[in-house]
Length: 374
Ligand SMILES: C[S@@+](CC[C@H](N)C(=O)[O-])C[C@H]1O[C@@H](n2cnc3c(N)ncnc32)[C@H](O)[C@@H]1O
Ligand SMILES: [Zn+2]
Image (tube, rainbow, N blue to C red; front, top):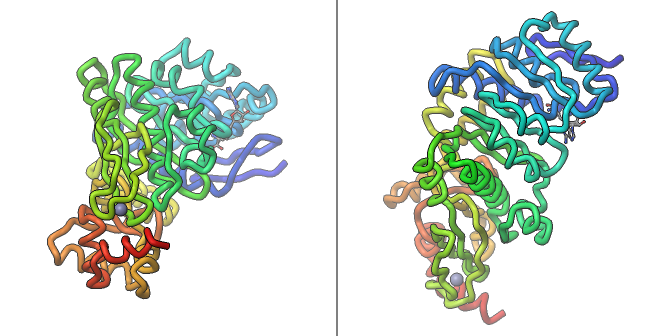
C-alpha cells in the first residue's frame, strides 16, 4: 500500500483522499495551533472533522500532544485511520469517530474545529460555529462560487453577490469570512481573524472564536459591501448590512457595481502571524509556508488590492518592478505592501488617481474618459 510521511507521521493512503500539494496547509495548521496555544489561549482538544487518512489529526496529536478526535463518515477511511493511529503509536491521544460531520458537531464541543470538506464548507458552518470553543480552521475549495465566477452558486451558498474583478481572490476570502461571522453570530459569538489566504484552488481561514453578544455585535459591524467601478478601477468599501452604496463613480461618473455582504475587517492578526512564522521555522516546515505567512504578516489592512499590470495597460506604460513601485507609494506618504493574492499586485490606501499619477504621471480622469468612449 502507498505510504507518505509528514514530519515524522507516516500514514498508509489506502483508497482515502490525500493531496501532497496541501502539506503546506497542514504545516500551517500545526504552526497555527501551536501559536494559538502559546500566545492566545491553551488548547486541549482538536477535531479533524473530515479526516480521510487522518494525517492532520495524527500530526496534531503527535507534534502538539493534543487530544485529537479524527472523524470521517466513510467507513473505509475510518478503518484506515484506526490502522494509521496504531502504526504511529498514538492510541492514547487519538479517538476515531464515524459520523456525518453535522451530527458530530451538533453533539459535541471541541477547542478547535477543523473543516476540510470536498467543495463548500457552507452547509457545516452552523454546526461548526456551535461546536468550536476557541478556534475555527476552515477550508473552501469552491473558489468559483466564492469569487463570482459562478454567481448563482455563490449566492446560494454564501448569500453574497461577489463581483469577478481583479481582486476576486480576496473577495472570495472575505465572502467566506463574512459567512463564518454570520454563522457564529447566530450562536451569540464573535470572531477575530488570525490568518487567511487563497492559494491554488482553495481558501483557508483561521479565526479565533469569541464568546458573548458584544463580540458577536462587533463582528457583525465588520460586514459590508464594496462598490467598484469597472471603468477606472476606483473602489469604495461601505460598512453595514444596510448601507447607502454610491451609484456613480466619483472619479469618472461610470455606474458602480456593489459586491457583498462580506467581511471588510482585518484578514490577519500581525502578531499571531509572527508567532506562526517562528513556529514554522522551529519546526523546519515547508519554506513556501514560511513565505506565505510572511507576506500575510506584512500585508497592510485594506480591503482589495490593485493589479499593477492592469493599471499599466490602461495607462499605456510598461510595468515597473513591484517593490520599486511600492517604495514610490510609501515615499509619497501612502501605506503600501505586496499581497499574497498575486505576485503582480499591491495593496495601498492610495486611491486610483494617486496610483496612476505616481505610476505614469497620468491623470486617471483622462484615461477613464477615453475608456468610457470606447
Ligand atoms: C478533502 S478530504 C479531507 C482531507 C484531509 N483533511 C487531509 O488533510 O488530507 C474530505 C473527506 O471528508 C469526508 N467526508 C465527506 N463528507 C463528509 C461528511 N458529511 N461528514 C464527514 N466526513 C465527510 C470524505 O470521506 C473525505 O475523506
Ligand atoms: Zn470610475
